[in-house]
Amino acid sequence: MKVHVTGLGVTAPNGLGAEAYWDATLAGRGGIGEITRFDASALPARLAGQILDFDAAEHIPSRLLPQTDVSTRFALAASEWALADAKVDPTALTDYDMGVVTSNASGGFEFTHQEFRKLWSRGSRYVSVYESFAWFYAVNTGQISIRHGMRGPSSALVAEQAGGLDAIGHARRTVRRGTPLVVTGGVDSAFDPWGWLSHLSSGRVSTATDPRRAYLPFDAAARGYVPGEGGAMLVLERDSAARDRGAHRVYGEIAGYASTFDPPPGSPRPPGLRRAAGLALADAGLTPADVDVVFADAAGVPELDRAEADAITAVFGPRGVPVTAPKSLTGRLFSGGGPLDVVAALLSLRDGVIPATAGTADVPDDYGLDLVHGSPREARVATALVLGRGRWGFNSAVVVTAVPG
Amino acid sequence: MSTMTIDDLRTILVSCAGEEESADLRADITDVPFSDLGYDSLALMETAARIERDFGISLPDEVMVELETPRALLDLVNDNLAGAK
Image 1 (tube, one colour):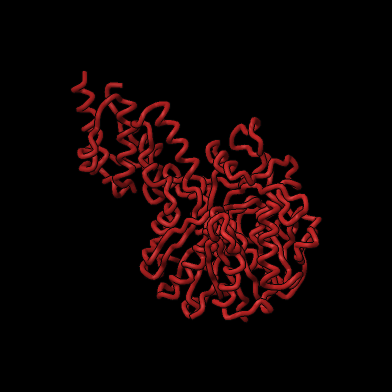
Image 2 (cartoon, helix red, strand yellow):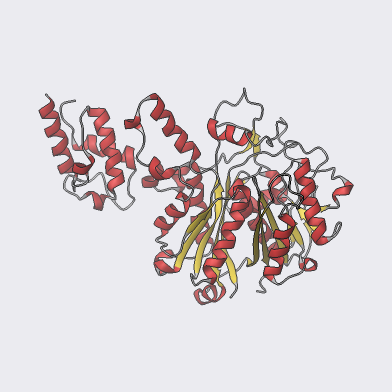
């Protein structure tokens, strides 16, 4: 049984909606700038990939506004757009035939920290009853499920930046086990003062001040990453279900998935990214020669970039495959990063073009990478490999393939 | 404040829990069940917490969950306020 992607919904720092995001990405328009949510002037890092054009009241029902964190609002909007894109009317389908699988790395941070402030400054009687679930990693799955009456198998996965790919992998598994339609993806946001310090605690956030030079994955001048917010939601369907429904468009197939875990620090064993890539290709029944582009994790930290370059060249050979990282325009979106890269990969299949890695210009020769940078590259793209790494050892890989129309 | 009016309650409900698209809150809602107005038990708990703070009274959860209409809630609050005088 094949699992097809029939709808896309995007909330990204450089575009609301999949087409707006894709236009901006191909044009090299980014969403990184000085953080505006709070006064960060005294902090060492002040650049973020923020979504500045999202009017929650325009996209989210009034009843849901008092009970949702900004990240859940993004997830609800992206899901709604993905379902509309797929031309799915959930009220016309059986509730137990639709599931929801999302990933989330931060929970409802901003909401929670506002409630904590009330708790400490005014007392427990001032804390919102909605804090009981608005903080929770599974809240996006729950709210999407309730909003669209989707009562089939549903779950939530947490694996930092790798988690969004795990959600897509598990959604594919859920479809294969018998649920015809699953809404899946990931969204994160943590740009309140506490959330921002949580980002900085990784020690990997760029302290550069020029938005165009702050996040330069695979560049000799790489000095860290920029945190972003948002992500993407996708509609996955059993191929026959999509066909029976008369789905107007199939973006591609989720053809392979794998995840691995790194050995403990100090172990002589290598990190698990290479194994994840190889296992995902094997799961898809493909070989490295079949892959037309790799969407890299692109940590933007020299030793992590080198480790990823080593994994890619170990699988594909030196300069054996085009590699790109459009997330250089948005920052790293945590659980939203993988799904947004899967969207970019699917649109690369559709349009025959590989988006560029923004900013990066000077790739060390010994990385052995054919990095697409400067401008997009036209190419026949039938198969893409998307990689994600999460802090503390998570590695995930998804293979998407074109479906002959 | 010595009494709470239906307009006070309407304002608090919308502020605490938003407004259901299918419900017309501007109509006379005094005897319309909360469930028809789109308000669940959590929405009523949040509303009760606000009323307690604004009016300086106590509304136990186990009493709140039994209330079915705005009239029942208004009666409870106003009896409470009268007793507190």
